[in-house]
Length: 119
Ligand SMILES: [Cu+2]
Picture 1: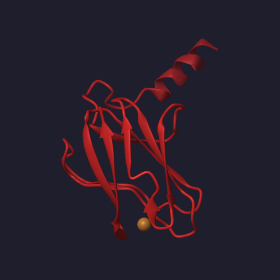
Picture 2 (picture 1 turned 120 degrees about the vertical axis):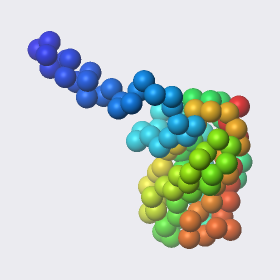
Picture 3 (picture 1 turned 180 degrees about the vertical axis):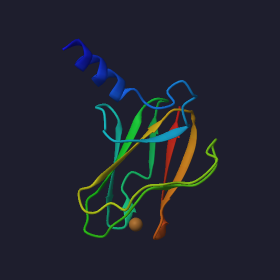
Picture 4 (picture 1 turned 60 degrees about the vertical axis):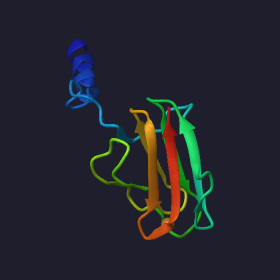
């Protein structure tokens, strides 16, 4: 039983945990307390959200047309972070580790813009 628990603990330890965290990172689950942005009518419905460092933002596409969230370099981001295309009711969560202003677009609809201000 003891070895099972140890194996489970090792399985959840992130690879490279000793390295400095990226300024922003995609996470697979939205913890409670994060900010939420709905995507509808070809817009990010809350185009500017504020969070504290260490918090998450979760985007939910609420319409049939696929959209994504695509961060551009800047604010400490060295390269693009391009999220997957979201179909209706699919979500995408990013954790923000470093203070700054992070601008993003939807890749196929670059007129869809938003930003996350991390304090
Ligand atoms: Cu779009």
